[in-house]
Length: 293
View 1 (cartoon, rainbow, N blue to C red):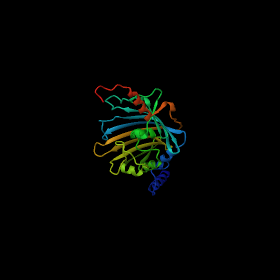
View 2: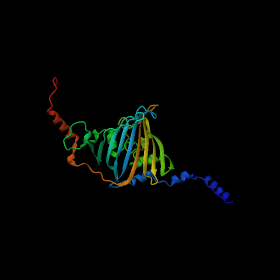
View 3: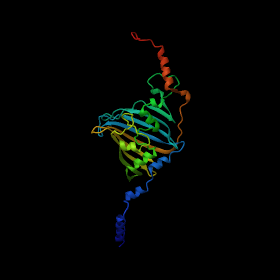
C-alpha cells in the first residue's frame, strides 16, 4: 500500500502544471552567475586567470592552430576591472606528437587607463634602467587593448552584467558535478543588440556592423556559488565550411582574493614619444650609406 501511495503521489506531482524535473528543480535554486560576479566588484580584490586561445580555418580544421597563452591576475573595483598584471606568449602550430612551442614571455601591467609593456620585448634600443614602455591605447592594436582590459581575449565579457544576463537568458543549463553548466550560441547581430558598447570583430579590429556574419558559441561552468570556473567559446566569423574560428578556454580561480596591482616605478617607465626621440638621437650619429641622399 505504501509503495502504491508513493507511486500515486509521484504521478500526481509529475502531472501538475509547471512541475519541475529533478534536474530543473536543482537548477531553480542555482545562484545567478551575473549577480555572483558583480558581487566581486570590490576594491582591492580580484581573480586569477589562465587562458589558451587557438586560431583555426574551419570548425574542424587542423591546418592552423597557432595561438596565444595568457596567465595573470585581474583586480576588480565597484565599476568592474580596474587593473591587470599578466604575461602572454605566442603559441606555435602544434606538430604531430609534439606540443606547441612558446615564444619569449611578454609581460603587461595595466592600472586604470595606463598600460605598461615589458621593455625587453621592444624591437629597438631602450635607455638603460627603463624596464617598461607606456604606449597610448590607440597605438596598441585591438588585441593588445582587449588583453590589457581583462587579461583575456574572450568575446563574452563576464564583467558586463547586462551582457552576462543576456547570455544566460539564451543558455540551456544543467546541474553538473560541483555546480552548473550553461551553453548556447548567439549570432553577431544578436551580440550587437545585447552589448553595452559595439562589439569588435577579432579578425579585423573593426566594429561588428549590420552586415557582419558570424556567431559565438559558449560553455560556461560555474561553482555552486555561481562564480565562473571555466569559460570555453568558439568565435566564428564569416560563412561557409571554412570560417575563421577563435577558440578560447579560460579558467578562473581565487575569486575574491586580496589583490592590489600597482604601476611600475616612474623612473623605470619611458613613454612611446620619449622612446622614439631616444631612437632618433641614437641614429643621428650613424654614418650615411654610400649613394644615399
